[in-house]
Length: 184
Length: 184
Image (cartoon, rainbow over all chains, first blue to last red; front, top):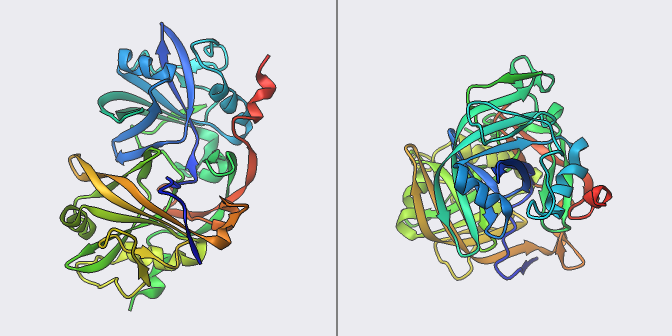
């Protein structure tokens, strides 16, 4: 039995990442769960226009996408509770840099992508920043035989319903394979 | 110790959904994991231009987003293995409709959103369709006290690395709460 939910956007669960940029010359970080692969070379990030991060991305035309593990959930959530307008976040994490010197990459996060802003889609209350991925880094301990191993990354998933973070669960099936049973 | 991965797009895990539209007057479905909340009223879907679905969305300016449970993983994967150009998929699922008569909503999926196409961002190999959510439906059995309960939905997560589907795991922490321990 279906019930109607007033055109709610319920596209979850989504990975929780920390978006980094420089604001006033210093690293700043914001947790974001509304971002996606646009194609295999680019990412979009949707951020409410009220955030401190937006000014930094517009000024520098660069940002980082850092995927934290579950052991960083307190720090991730803290970054969402306090604005960089009032609290400096540059001391929260040790950063390193690739070729983009305003895209701070968080050492403690097992996966890091440095992105160059290519276009911005303006929605009524949100900026959707589209970035070209310039470099990707991964913690070697999160790889198995030269491939990223998500059971080792232990990412943080987010759902708006319940305002909750979740663990990634067990593997379910192989993609482009399990459906073969239904082919004639 | 970090290793460089050649600018790979590793923004996962993502929820796996079935995007529905009409092509040549009949429902067609494609599994998609590259879609996101643009803002609380709209969704973007990135689909390679080679797919049958793209023609239908362009023609009808409407599509559905259906979130399947793990028990549909074979059917979801099958939809990605075969193209609607060669195999009719309209008999795979029973569909219902809201106000958009070319956005087929799958009865067997616990969550359904009907979307009206508002703009298309063209990338070299992908169409990124942006849709306004017109209606959202949810299976009542997946709600707890009038709120969506993701542990009951049992969504299918996808990672490109390992070409794998995953279960959602256990709750980890409360968002906008667990980080308060770090506030002064």
